[in-house]
Length: 153
Length: 211
Image 1 (cartoon, each protein chain N blue to C red):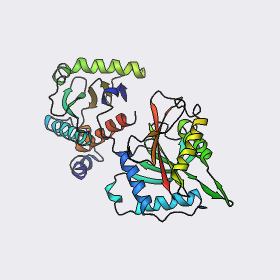
Image 2: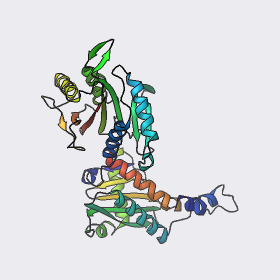
Image 3: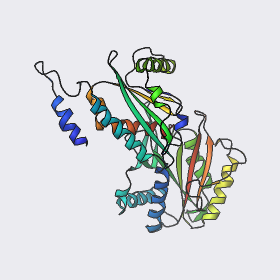
Image 4: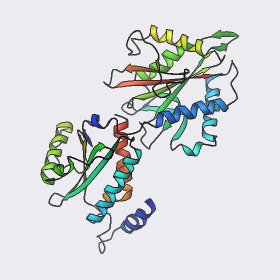
């Protein structure tokens, strides 16, 4: 999986030239990339989870501000997500709200594109749109960071 | 950048690292040749580390084990100590499970010494002061009980804990609790501590290894 990412995305992106500036890492993500990312992220977290809980996930993008949004909902295992649809309804307003939350914590008003915000049983993640942020490697790294944040809190 | 309160996610993951480490240490110790009653702490720890890392089941455990890992205060750019045995579950330097080792009931210059005071003041206290495991909520103490009198060693340590309960941030009178990880193992205990730099409770897992 990591080798495939390296072969398909990283190696072709090394040393872009003026003649070929459009490399895979910075090319905007598409629906298939995001579907693969969210599937692996959820599968990995659910593999590590105890037998009682699981996560469900959705992704969306807001191209006008160049931000992708991932929302995870923690539920009892076997239970359907109850808040995901509402959480994804208006991506732009969600991103603005997340920015305000981050600004409260960090005093920063700049656009946040690498943010993880816990809101009860929801976890919001904002990401840039470049493909390199939506690879399988990124999904495994994000799962690792989420687990570390929760386990070491 | 992480914001918000992850409290609702606290129970999401299986806490598999600490049970796995405790089991590995106990099973490894049971296979080792037991140390002499005069053996030095570092010598015992090196032998334990060697046995841990060369064990046949080592590949089952996806964590890195280090011996005498140097603790650096990155704010002060200063070395603050050496942790005896450390287990790293990820690539994050500040996330580890530290096992601090102390001898108990050892023969020192021909005299039997309980060394329970050193266990508490030079071992447990380092976790409570945040010198070790500052950013995490679990730490471990390894008591090498060199005369094999484990119950006596546990009693001596508990008396010392009670004497220093306030400095240790413990609820009085300051007693051992049964292990939440290995509740049926009478040689494994647990203590809970309030540290000055955080609100979360810090857990010390105590493993008393019979010599």
